[in-house]
Amino acid sequence: MTAPSPRPLDARAAWALPVAVLALSTVSVGALAAAPGRPDAMAAVYPPWWSPARAAASAATAGDLQAVGGSATILVVRSDRPGLGGRLRESGALFLIDSRLASFCLTPAEKDPA
Image: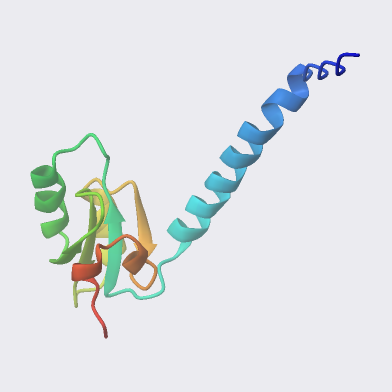
């Protein structure tokens, strides 16, 4: 006696998981990018195809660089001048992350204990 062969998935079932993952990712990025909690410090995510030097130079036009994330195009920036988020977006940032959540992007040596 042989075991019954598994039923092939129909097209809708095969796409369900990838679509669910995409939807969850989109919602997560939207929630993080919505409104950073601290107006004087935030992490800016620059295009991954930019060089680290280009991303750092762009971020430096908006404020003081504080840390570099796990990817060299994720940069934590602080500024006492109002409008940091707008300046970061104008400098090319794809989206902004609340600086309190940015610690998840930093390597352990870069995390600020404060």
